[in-house]
Image 1 (tube, rainbow, N blue to C red):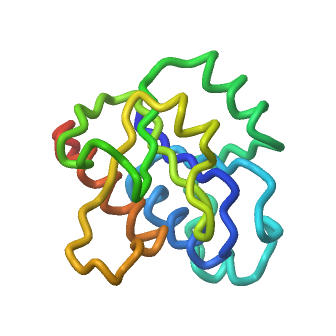
Image 2: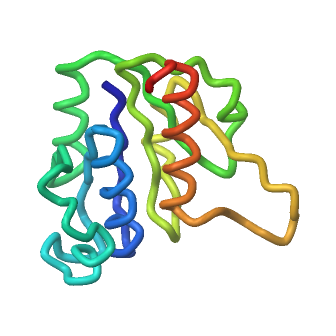
Length: 152
């Protein structure tokens, strides 16, 4: 099962939209604190609509807690970053991979990126556009992984 990991997300509607995507695809969603909002935030709930009961949500108090769970399971770490060295289309996804995404303002911390098996980027052709919206990036990465794995 693929896993989406949000490290220090800041904007509730982005996380809510990602939760809805994870619910629709039966993908685990891991949130690594500190978060820029409360889990009960009304904007988070509104963006996720009434799909929260279908989200396989894992909350980690900090990065150390996340690493502890990761080490108990298998799979590659694929960190999505604008400073990546592998196009997301060229990553060889496997069923038990962890797709990591950083906060909207800072991206993935260097100590997280340094542990990733792949540092994937999503091509942006307009040089004045620095990055894509977090929920869009997650959907692009997740659906490419699902396409490669031939998920229905």
